[in-house]
Image 1: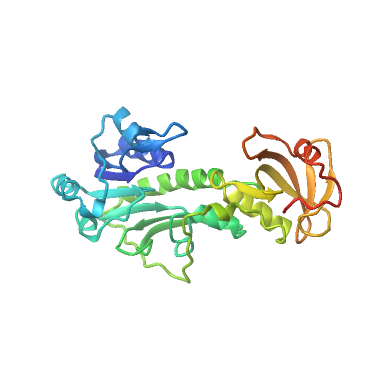
Image 2: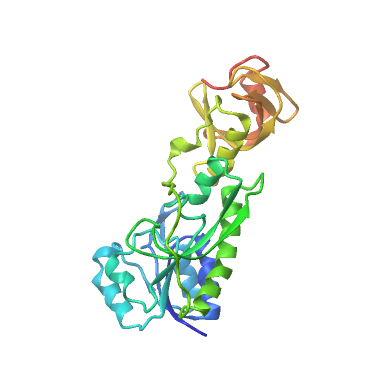
Length: 307
């Protein structure tokens, strides 16, 4: 059955959700974040969802503050919506809007709720070393990801999966589950969330700092979790160095101590085990092999990599 929907989303991650919905259902309105400066030139540009909506010939609204935007609320009221779908929109949906669609607002949340409520569930699942996560299709309420769940599916976390890769995999499976729920809206009965909640706030720049005192696996898990932003980094002699590619390794020594410099990589001791730095990018320079950077800084065995 084709449903009449509104879609709320903004980044590129949400575009495949919009495309799938537009193929299977009638998307009457797309609500996204306002245009803003982007890139090095800070040229004002539309969100990825707004651009995709234009390509699909869909109506778009870009309220600056949804809570205070009466025009968007009125547009939604006259559309006779079966449901609205939210995928990484970027603003809280006010309670007055949640009641407008016949079956409410549905959300794709890439975690096993109530674990990792908030803006960065995939990132924090990886940073915290989770070996299993999942995706939930929920009905929004006025809380922060506290609404009841229609369906939830668990999946193992790949040992080398980054936040980008895992979030896209969870999204793609979430789209399949969402389409199924939309088919059976009349009979679907969401259940309240059960268990102890945990939270996943937006990442800060400091979350990407390498903690050399942590075990090598924890350092690697954090590295995977802070992709693509803020990325992993450390400071050496007052200079910030981005760590673009790394992996756990064997070895022991004082945390942050260089164990050896190879042809391409550098092995550095962690709180437990070691990590192999493969590619780095010093401040203001191009990416380079970690070994080339270390030799340029005269870093050899026994030297501390972190200031």
